[in-house]
Image (cartoon, rainbow, N blue to C red; front, side, top):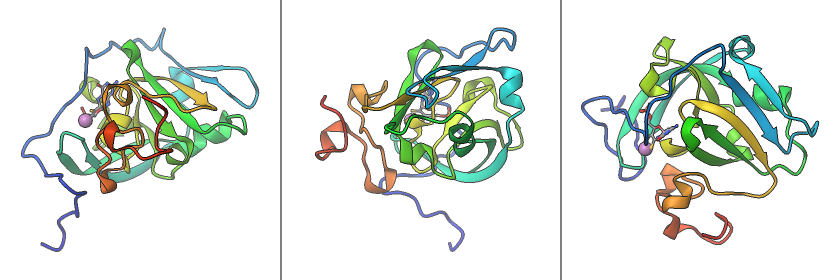
Length: 200
Ligand SMILES: Nc1nc2c(c(=O)[nH]1)N[C@H]1C(S)=C(S)[C@@H](COP(=O)(O)O)O[C@H]1N2
Ligand SMILES: [Mo]
């Protein structure tokens, strides 16, 4: 059918909406929660935003397909959130920054090339389908990088670390591809070509 989405190779649309993560769902307390922006910042100092600071940032809406490396694709998810470009503008990285590490509660992390993070479609999402994120989908704040496999779309984001040297995140250290482009089926680290990832 003409209006069916074109899926990346090897992907299918599941019958039910999956929830997928490793480990427990963190509790959110606006009194103690903060988002840390650290590492190679332009100012050489780190920023700690409270939830009220984050909630005051500008928001855009975006609809995108969501591709998990376990081969399901959820078509047409409507997200709303803070454009990553806005974060980069307000809290700029130092010139030599090449990657960001996105950190969640409990030590989950994913590395993203600065060019992927700076894409117009990369969001720090607060809403899904018109409502605040549910706890299992990353409340209160999750990364969305629709053009990469979904393990890069870190739920329960607590920190953004600017890197001048690439470093593997949680799944990238455990056999998954460093750059994770679903259209090129970059699923596993053994597929990496020279220059696509730091040494394993
Ligand atoms: N903090 C955290 N974020 C995470 C994960 C995780 O284990 N921990 N799993 C990732 C994976 S593999 C997928 S497929 C998506 C699933 O998002 P959903 O549960 O909202 O569908 O979250 C990603 N973000
Ligand atoms: Mo996934």
